[in-house]
Image (cartoon, rainbow, N blue to C red; front, side, top):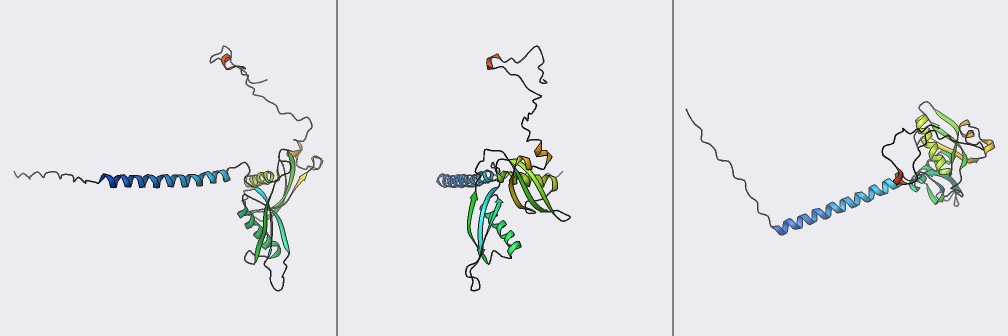
Length: 229
């Protein structure tokens, strides 16, 4: 019988590193990781603050005009009220509507001013009527809706969510034509009229009675509590 010579296992090569160089590399890696985490952390914080704030939409007043030329040295100003999450989107929507209405492009025009409009009484609940036009998969439709909100921007935001839920309409396919405050006598929709009763009451079917003091609470009681009244 022939026997093969057993090969000796290769010895692992030991790499000797300078401790000073390794410390410097470690410090650089730590600084890079901290800078990266702080950078992306600030971006995510700003993104979530703008994306999931109390009101996503704001009301802006955008004023623009065509660029002055020899034929028209003093162009006419056009003012619009735009509902958008920020000024950049408000300017974009302004040029979209202006190109449809007056054939004016962004390349041949300029923005004069952009101002945010705030509600005069934001703590008071009001009835808002919204006239809108939206593009569906079958055509273009006009619609009138009513909402109960505290501000105009909140009513438009609810309208966008309602259109997305009921009609699958995207933000770009919905055009807000008019937003107006409606008196209680002029409300048309039954789902808003039922909230305008003078003695409106909401039932509380499941009320849990709790002791006033924490010391009087018991983990085990002899009788099962009932929440129906």
